[in-house]
Amino acid sequence: MRLAIVRLTMMLMATMLSATSFSEEQNPDPWEGFNRKVFAFNETLDKYIAKPVAEGYQYITPEPVDQSVSAFFSNLGDVLVIVNDLGQLKFAQAASDTARFLINTTVGFFGFFDVASHIGLEKHDEDFGQTLGYWGVGTGPYLMLPVLGPSTVRDASGRGLDYVSGLSYTNAGQNFAQQSGLFVLNNIDGRADLIASEGLISGDRYTFIRSFYLQRREYLLKDGVVEDEFEDFDDFDDEEDDWGDDWDEEPAE
Image 1: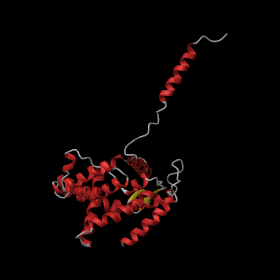
Image 2: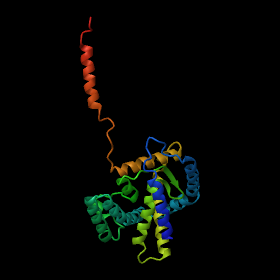
Image 3: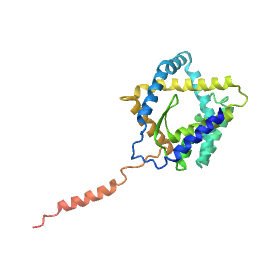
């Protein structure tokens, strides 16, 4: 099974590398017809299975327990965050995230309590998709994945690498039933956390989610640094002053 995942990941990466010249000025969603069909499938699956289960989980789970479960899986994810910190040459951040993981795993009782955040160690969000982008790999077209949801060709390849890497450190001492239980619980908890924000979606759900996803990924890739599109306003002001001087001059006779 793991070999099949690796092969699929390599196939996606090959496709992605052929799309590195993909320009943002082009249509970011050339496969929209296919993507909308997958989106409709995901919506049906969510409506009749994922959301009802998540709502039931949210109803029977006390808020402190829900927060502890989320913190536990977040702490597990910090291992991959550290790997991708190093992959993007963010050594100071890697040291901070390593300290965060060690503190939450020990003092935080295996991550059930986020002690690190309370002492100023910020939670970061890094994955292989961002690491590939850091090294210049293009996003490729937008891609809606069955069950997994919105992605791009690059991010889909990164997810495959994240999954394979995650198996390497979560499989230790666990049988298939335990692995499956953790996987299901993680996804139910994650879906439950999204329920409160569903009211923010307006208009065409497909278009809204696509726009949000692409903007969010760009934000993460640039570490929140937004380019100043108005950096030339100072020049504009100077030109405006020149125009004002011209208007103040007496018209030539």
